[in-house]
Image 1 (cartoon, helix red, strand yellow):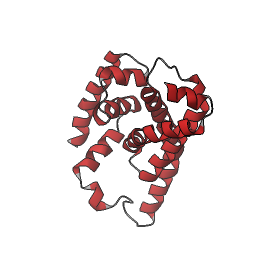
Image 2 (cartoon, rainbow, N blue to C red):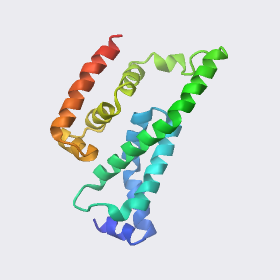
Image 3 (spheres, helix red, strand yellow):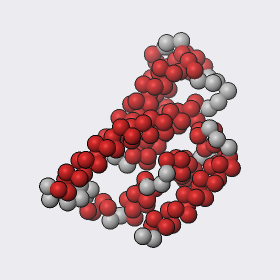
Image 4 (cartoon, one colour):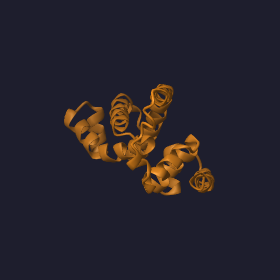
Length: 171
C-alpha cells in the first residue's frame, strides 16, 4: 500500500508503476469484454484515467486489482453502450453496400471466435461473471467482490451463463 499512498500523494513514478503493474490484466479483461484490440486499448486508457481521478476514493482494505477490475467492467459497459448503435449502423451499411460480413471469414471459423461470440451474446451480468471466473480465473468470492454482489449470485450467474452458452453454441 506504500506505492498506492505515494501515488495518491502525487508521486509520478508511483503512479506510473501502478499503471505498468496493472496494465496487462486490465487490457486482457477489456479485450475479452469487447473482442476488438483498438477498443480494448481505448477502454484500458479510460480505466487508468478514471483510476487517477478516483485514486483518493480507493478503500485500502480492498485489493487494488479487484477495484481496477470493477472500473474496467464499468468502463467496458459504458464504451459498449456508446459504440453499439454506431457499429450496428456501420454493419448494416456494409451489408447493404454488398461488402458482406465485415468480420473476416477465417477468424469467424475458429472455435475461440465462436465461443467469444456466444459469450458476447450473454446478458451483461452473466458475461461479466463468466469473464472474471473463467478468463481471469478469479474465485466466485473474488468475482463477487469485483461485481459487488454475493458469492451465490456469481454462482447463479455462471450456472445460467453455462446453460445459455450450451444453447447458443448448439444453434
